[in-house]
Image 1: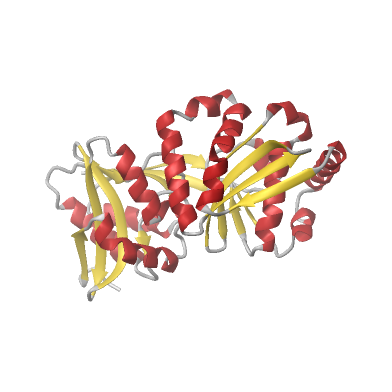
Image 2 (image 1 turned 90 degrees about the vertical axis):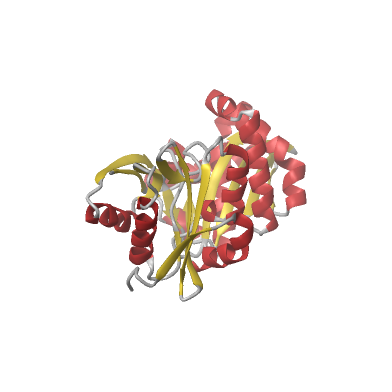
Length: 329
């Protein structure tokens, strides 16, 4: 397919919301961060004087892609930043990646004030990455492609027993030992909240546990970020895409994790635990039991997302690279 028959036009969130949601489920590489709910919520809170450059790409009148971009002082970038968004990309249906990316690049290049396109947080295996670099090289723009971070994740089998058996010998032994120790310490219960009402009623407790778990997380959770996380979680929960898993020990909340789901993938967005129970590994085990639930529901990949925290590898995760691409005229 070529880019000559593609039309790239400016769009608004309201005008393309329905088509956006349809594309989200047609694009195999899409993440929850590419949902209209996520992008619109971020823009409403963090635009900071930038100009929205939301683009819709159509072929013969049919929407085939959305490029969620913004521009500021001659620089075009994705909506969102690395503090709250783990993955950026274009939302592209089917086999249109190369022509769509080329058409979007050409459209942006026609803006006279633009001298730089700065695309953060593209998954290293995203088809967009190669297509964007190809488009830049064809136009002789200067290209910088650098490592940004890792996003560990684990491919899940059909049963939890198979998952545990697939762990390294040491990790498998440690997980079973920690589960036995936790169960010996008291009555363990895990609850999974999905509805907006259920999550809203427990969101403050979730934030409390995240803050408790480390000084870095406490500092990260500014009032503005907490408001954003609350709002975007509620928006995703209304679409059946949010899961708040909380662990109780003898009736006391000791750990919590917030994840978002799209198709057969789950994205672990943030988590926390009460350090008073650190010796029982309640944070790691809350993740492990959440994986058991996810496997039973047909989730086939759990993405722990940005950061190389040790517990992710204890649970069998393998690194996936995140790249940062900058091109200049």
